[in-house]
Picture 1 (cartoon, one colour):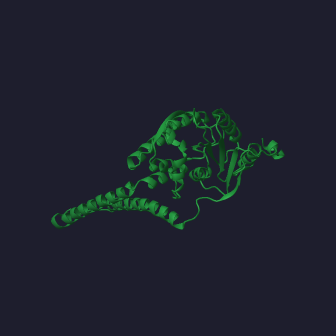
Picture 2 (cartoon, rainbow, N blue to C red):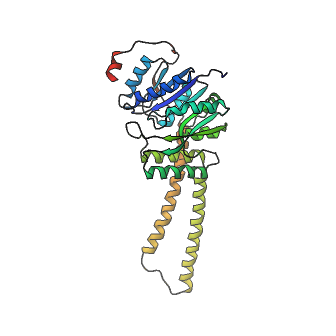
Picture 3 (tube, one colour):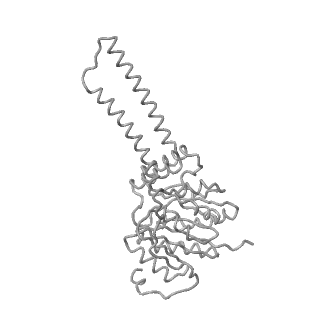
Length: 328
């Protein structure tokens, strides 16, 4: 006989009006099948479409649905953090609303959790609908991150995962602002395992991670868990300096002991541009770390909530509003 547990599912959403009802229906079907108490927490990350209204309607019709509505867009990782901080379950599942991560995998995650694992992450065995460029860059990023960091962050995984209550509580103590949640969870060091699944195409709508955001996300991940880029810049600086002195010695030798002279300015400009490029690259790496220090030093709250719904009101049903019929 298994002990009854409460399951919290955290769903960060941003401009997901086209998929939100379908996502709710599939999550609801899976959670009802567990025959366990549960709560479904949607975090609206400053959506500019009808997402907030639709989530309000779901809260009005289903008391197990909770809403955290941000005052503006604070970012996907911050939305995940807010959901975890408000979750009350013994097990907390994070899943995106776009249905690329199938909710039907959640029971398998819970089974692994019952076996004694504190973290059960979803591992992508196949990525449907992704371009070759997206698959290649994602695979390269995960393996580069694995080489750069001392933390064992599983490759080919996203934020789709289940964490135990104690992991969730430990995560609350980590207050850094440029967050890479899956890395922080690994850094905490609890017992973890993976569940393989096929990542589907988006049910509807557009990706919320274009190339620009993916690059920023990659920088956040690397600078959060590795100082090796700083060491690399130091090594490059030393190598460039040694090369410069060697070149200077050659120039002095040619000037003093030979009749050979350097004509033209092309070689001088090429060398100058090369060294200036190296210096600017190192300054950029340093700037990334200094920027993170600046963000931490400001001490601003991680997010600002406009309103919440249905927290502390489980089991209290309310009437279906007319506006919900109009939206649905």
